Image 1 (tube, helix red, strand yellow):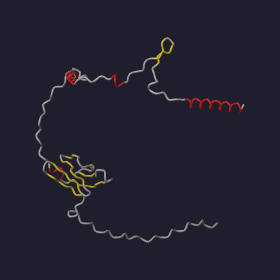
Image 2: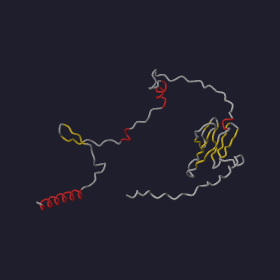
Image 3: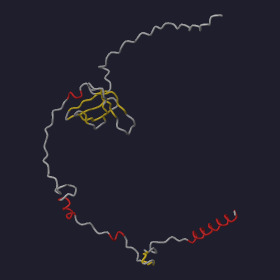
Image 4: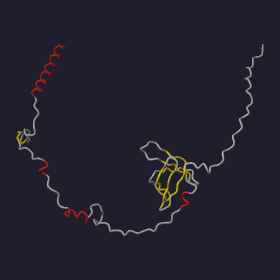
Length: 194
């Protein structure tokens, strides 16, 4: 039984090798379409090149109807043109940055934009700002390692990470704790003699 299985495998491998060696890839000129009509195979003429079937696009003027009657609007009419209202600029609130504190500047990699962490006056939440961000009417123009620069119209303000000139005086050192010497632990109580 074992020899018969081995012999069958050798015969199958020989057939596969024979087909492999005789195989020739078909070129595009030799391939033709075949159709089945009433169970008979009938050779058809080769298909034309797909690029030759393409027709040129019509001129843009033919698509004017699409612009005049939009498909996805309910009444199929273009929306009316709106008049742009000019809103007068509000005066700049220069007190918006008063009391704001720069708490940290994060520079993760040389390629990444630095991030400034700013704490607004009277709030516990920290705001993340990068160069180009808008905050309370001011635009962040630069985030450096020790300061953030804000600008609005012609006014420029800078927040410094730490201003040593206006910092509070240092607190006095605390006296060392006077500890009591440790008492050795008491020996365990011995049971009374019987």
